[in-house]
Amino acid sequence: MARVLATAVRVSPWQSLLCLFETLGKVLAALSPLFIGVFAAGALKQDLRQMLCAAAALVGSTAANTALQAVGVNARVRQMELVGHTFDAQIAELTARIPTLDHLENASYLDKLQILRDNENALGGALNTLINTINTLAYAVSVLLVAVTADWRLLILIALGAARLLTARWSMRWEKAAEEAAAAPGRLTRHLIDLTVSPAAGAETRVFGHQSELRRRIRLAVVGWRRPTVRSTDRNSALAGANSVLFFATAVVLLGWMTRDAMAGTVSVQSLVVAVGVLQGLQSVSSSFVSAVGSLTKVGRNCARFLWLRDYADEVAAVHTGRRQPPDRLRDGIRIERLSFRYGDSARDSLTDISLDLPAGSVVALVGENGAGKSTLVKLLAGLYRPTGGRVLVDGVDLADLDLIGWRSRMSGAFQDHARFELTAQRSVGAGDLAVLDDPERVLRALHDAAAEDVVNALPAGLGTRLGTTWPGGVDLSGGQWQRLAIARGMMRQSPLLMVLDEPTAALDAATEHSLFERYAEARRPGRVTLLVTHRFSTVAAADLVVVLDQGRVIEVGPHAELLANQGHYANLYELQGRGYR
Ligand SMILES: Nc1ncnc2c1ncn2[C@@H]1O[C@H](COP(=O)(O)OP(=O)(O)OP(=O)(O)O)[C@@H](O)[C@H]1O
Image 1 (tube, helix red, strand yellow):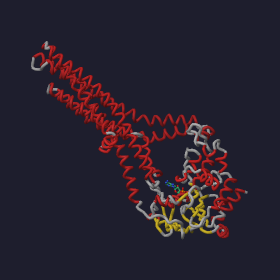
Image 2 (image 1 turned 45 degrees about the vertical axis):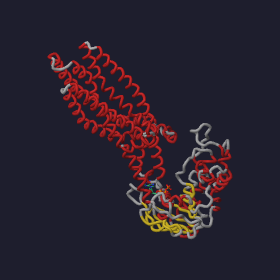
Image 3 (image 1 turned 30 degrees about the vertical axis):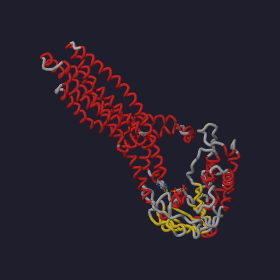
Image 4 (image 1 turned 135 degrees about the horizontal axis):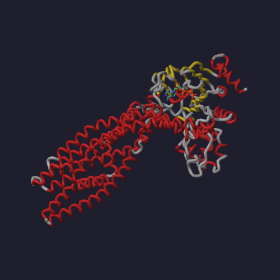
């Protein structure tokens, strides 16, 4: 909370100060019953001066209150936006700064990030809640002071308000239980709604006739999602109603008692009028406190998630302390020593005890069936995860001792989960080497190396075509065309030490695949390791070395011809896939 306030003061000290005008307005509003009481007492005494002063104070304070509120609310809304954007930018920066991928792939981390994303501007909202709480406090203290100075009996009503605060714990418990009970059906509802509106699932849901079943399930899921909240709201309303009945019943008795004393002359008319005027304020104090405590609890949860992200980013940065720069060119190559890896929540290793030599200047093919661990190995080579056992040596230097940013600046390639940069075609490809982002010659060369010139040639404005239909005049591409641009992006860097092509042919037709592999053979360079990842065995014959992965273990290594001659797993699958092609 202190951080939220400090950020508010930092982003705009003046506006932060203006926010407090609203608080001042609240204090003035709380004083109104006092002025009315003084006015009534003046009227009874026929004291024109007192009446005029009280009326002037009432009108003046109401006018000042209106003006202060207008300035204060305006400042609060603007400040909320500013602080919200500052924190949203920090969340984006922190998420992007984390050099590993765990926070984007681990389910429990993802939940936290998702909640942060869902509660966009949550921390701007936190400032709003804080200011509202300050206003509530200022109003409450003023109302209580006015009440106590009017008559001691009003203390009984204040005590009742305090009792209402004690029951707030029940309300919060009900709300939390409802939030938890609604979480799973809420996720299910969103998933089912996504299925009905996402174009990706559109064809299947129609062909398989899922629509009416989806509608039925969405209805059920929505009921499961909203019912706990409705129940908790009902309970809270009943509790608030019971509290109000008790409060006003007590107030009627107290006012009767005070009226009797006023008739007897032991209580002034001013006190009686103030007591009547302050009733509504006293009642609202306790309920606004209850809602302020509820909102502060929610805000606290969001702040805690932000702090978790910040601490996590620091933790990851503290682990990656390597500062050595990679060599200009590889002399020996990349050695993998007894490497093991297990994803955070997983029950088993995805890679187990892998040892391999990837010699400098070679093209290595990494083959294996779905789930064999190929992409995981690539991610470990890119330093996107820390191995759970063993190490990767780059020309004899442990990857953990290398500066990660330096190492990645010497990598390139196309990844299985490639990005779709909705920019111009020029920049979408040029993003593979930011230094020459706008250089058409370099982009054309990369397109040539990736056998993807025809993708750009078919675009209405060539390299200048805006990609993505979400933009005016934007053009959409097929899955295979996006992938070919991603491969071209991977060809932008001139002298990477490690070139990774992870399943580069997954979405490509046979002719494109053929021409692409011819170009890959040209990617063989001294001082570089080229790693081709695929589960199409037929495409790797030209590689210098074939590594066969199976269930996270290396089961065969050697040149294509040697592995065929061994008549092992590789030879079997090669034969099987070959038959499929014939
Ligand atoms: N983020 C993750 N969290 C937990 N387990 C994962 C994660 N990503 C992959 N795995 C598991 O690790 C194993 C290896 O997956 P990997 O993606 O490396 O296989 P692959 O050989 O690249 O498969 P494919 O050819 O299908 O892409 C699989 O059992 C998979 O379920």
